[in-house]
Length: 574
Image (cartoon, rainbow, N blue to C red; front, top):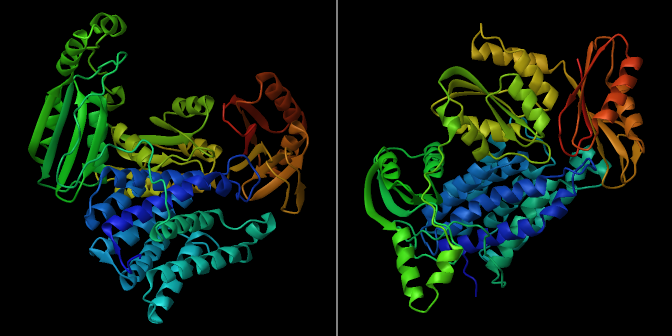
């Protein structure tokens, strides 16, 4: 019979079950996108966020330390957060674990307190919270949980079931709170994702037989003890690139936050592979295969004293293995099949940048877009955008690689701004300025309007003002039938989407693009910039430019290769 409280072991099981259930439903959740475009990514973003935390939890093995598990959930989801829905989910988990970490067992009153803290934390993370979203669903669950506790409910199974029932009722009402959901005939996708996590949690509590295996999880590491196996699974075609299996524990003598953890992990990746790094409150467990253990040890000493040090020569062990196999007549065959590498690792040249006062990071999808930003002086382009929202950790890694005191981040997508803000909050050694660019053209305008003669804060204000004057249109295709903004859309129709909604729809690409541009124009527009995507030929793009130049002869019309996926054309009018 299930207990009426949750211990660390049960919390691990419930959390992993929630993560796995969300993962299994991610494509269905993606299809709940309001716009019927092929870039619905809420399910993907939430899954990648929670799976980042699930890998951290799995790395703890059979730990029964509530504080360690809560930290793994919080830090893992925080670093892996992608998109607005993923960032909000990470904040919900952060708030919940902040309370839960102080208890060995979670009773109903403690769960209520943790759920209230989760909602409070998530709402604070969003500048302008909207009702009818994942926030509303989470608040509804927490409110119902409080009511059940006040009513004297002591059966935890009933408590969870009632919370889920009410959560689904709130989810069903989201179209009434957000007209755009009602018009599209869908419920909020983020809220649906949260309910799938809750469903998995309940299945685990009820003892349902579940596969809780997390793919690509780090190898097991118990709290307080480095338990990495150094046994080699030797195969005939194995290449040992890094010869020393190096393990140790850092006894921390100063603060070791998420930024430190990412910097240290990035350093280890530059000198080796097979890296596992698990941070607890007072210790950090480290495992790395490298050709120079001294470099790893020297860097680790910055954070504290070392203990439980262990270095194994894997090449020597491997040769001994080969020798034993040769006694069975296999030596010659294996030696012919194998070459043992002694190459030294290639250092990350990005870290060798000379120091500068101001740097830029931009998010963009498509090789052409990346070249455009680099040509404008952007230091680091994160590959991503509408279909691939980078995580908070991706942002932090980019920040670490730009050797500047002040760094501007251009998210270039409304679904990436929260992750950028979260990365800025986690950065302590540099000044980060997130320009709230929602489109690629806004990002380009921001860089162009940077002036070295004024302060970064003044530049930020100028950029914010300038991006307001940029109109953006994007042309893609529909993945389902629907009615949006009063326009009937059929599957495979071409759609022109503007800053505030659908501008054009038809069965012809050029017609849709031209009608979209018509809707963007006014008397103040002087420049039309067209960026053609990976699925458009240069010849077809040139034909479109000719049509636009003829139609708007008083405007300058620029054409550039963007190479972006999913969107045939991205157009700006300024």
